[in-house]
Length: 230
Length: 249
Image (cartoon, rainbow over all chains, first blue to last red):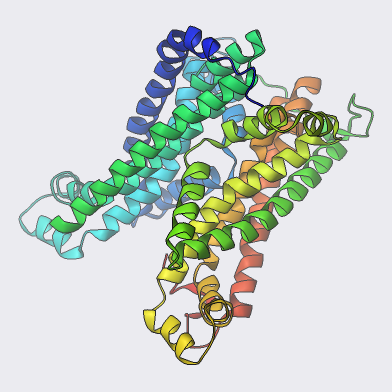
């Protein structure tokens, strides 16, 4: 069973796996998280807006993204982004974007829909009185949001935002379908080159498991700490 | 945009010799549904057992169930897919591994097992949350009536808990359908894979992916509608507001 288990292949490929693969996985996770939370918050504000067209656009976008599989969205944007680039820049042919930039755009846009729902719950968890108080001391909408509502919403939702980021971290492995070399992609390349599927995939699984488990444990302690403060 | 839209492409014959591109997409829908439904059966069965184990007073059962949930939740679905498809046949006894590899439709069976167990961890968490959201008096009343622990679960706790977690289970069911698209990486010809190969054969990228998106949206609508009917049908008057509005999610 494990008689010809080859640990050496893992050791040999460690620099490649982590310096190339994990570096990309981590950057993609962080970029998509920052972008996703930024756009997600804007979308949440749109979804809570009383101005109907804004509400309609945001709800439509979020519901569409949440009903489609991520794999399909990755393919969609992989082919669509060059055309949008052409449309924006007015160049005569579709703009070459490349799989890496395309995957960053995809994950930002896709995760924005999920972060939006979290931020919407977060904004709604801030009591109405806070908003009224903001207006009463003369702040406008943006100031109230910036200085009163959003800081509290972020604080309340921090554990959920981080949990979503753990899911995002795991989902980034799906860039495999457009042949981007992330951590799993790197493991898979070594596995196929050296014919060591068992070792490489088990090792990849172990690393994902350790990182996700550690992160979710951290979220749990964070949750406990926030619960006491409130 | 100077993209050549050609919606008539769906009536053109596809080079795989099985009929038109439309037939190809429909056959993809069949595989998506078959995979999701079978996997859902596994997820629901295994998830309920593991979820119940986590609420018992047996320390070993709680520990085992927690380990189960953490393993299936903290490894990306795609990696699990590869583990089932590439790694498992190598780890089992040699002859059994050969048999597994030569199995027709190996991608389908692996996808079903992988999705089923992956989702079962999530279902388990929902079932556990449902049971724990019940007042403790429910279990005590069951015991006071003289029911065994098993009977208390069967006749008191689970009927209530499942009604409470029906809305989150609906979204898990939607997730399993969406996640079945990950199985294209091991060669399952479900909807997204069909759209991908249609795009490669015909170069009509956006028609193919629009068709796939429409199929997923339609499945979503049907599932949400069906589950709403189910929620209304099983609602116990006075227990949870009709339509599951008062569910503890």
